[in-house]
Image (tube, rainbow, N blue to C red; front, side, top):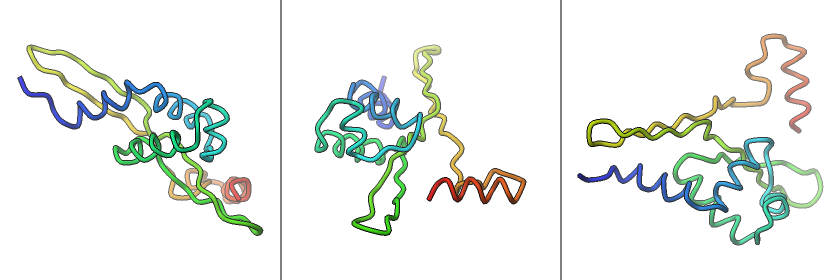
Length: 123
């Protein structure tokens, strides 16, 4: 029986404790590489290697935060909502569910004032 390469890649990523820590931390709130390094107790190069792998497989999203002073920086947010694996009559079936991604903060709000507040808070 041959295994789906995408399934093998996802299982490989999720078997990595560092990658799981990054996903868990970024599922709570967007975090920069420095924040992830501090929160997950790993070096920044380790964070960047895992972030790259997670992004390649669509499990992590990157946004650029604009600063009025200094350099801009990236924050990362988990897009993985659920992963399931089932064995049924000799084959594995995997399902990856992603979070609903808003194009901009407040997009899901119906009230204009609420929309403005969400956009303002995200600046």
